[in-house]
Image 1: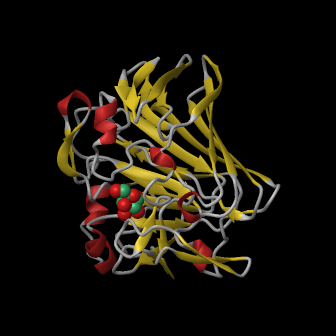
Image 2: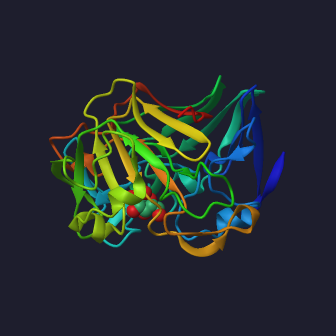
Image 3: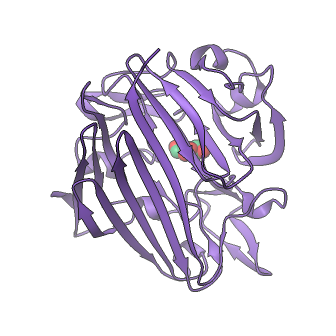
Length: 337
Ligand code: GLA
């Protein structure tokens, strides 16, 4: 179905559905538009009613798939195979979410579609936003029971950076809710990386114990945010990468709202938690809700931000000819306790 026009190109909206879940996706940015638990009728992701809303949001990447490199690259600079690369600085001194024209603003084509899955494809050419290699990306959305799976499959004709994530903002209390502060959150990691004054993740990984970053057990977000920490203050909330270390598939976080719960799993080594600190209250979202600070929370499963420049972290490199697949799952169910 046609969702609108962007730069003379038609943007399509696709619906996938099963017994429990209904989701809508658009071809621009392979964006998740809605994610509905059918029995309650609650849509748990922030979004806009029409394409214009998405085109005019203030750098918030609502529901989009971001790449080639999710989050920040310090100074927009990295070295790969001895060669220096410069990618656009679109976040102060950093390159954020793939640059000025990252994958979130690109039109994907529909490659496959049936009632419960869709495969979207993007060919990103050599030197696209300064990155090496012709990269072919496939984003597969698939429903299985209560799970919405994302599969990011990449193949390139040269070594390149490959770090894709989904940037959905969750609010489990539905489209009119103003805040996630009363949601409860569990994050299955005991370590988080601090950020520098530019918001870029550093190599300084701390233990979460006795800090507002500690979500090893289910805790109310509001209470943890109230525990003062200079890094939480400088970010105006959470904008930090939790460290998981390996590429095994694991459950990374559980979020609970009034009636629903969400479980986030992936095979990626990090999860960047962003509490919507820059939502400015000026963009009119679903049902007329103007999204402000802490209206939604993102769980961006990805390689560690700026990992290409740090030797102690796993680097997000896709080798020439290799086919790399990463998987994220959002499992949405009724809250049991
Ligand atoms: C990411 C970043 C945040 C912010 C949002 C988009 O989560 O880490 O700092 O830029 O994207 O607004």
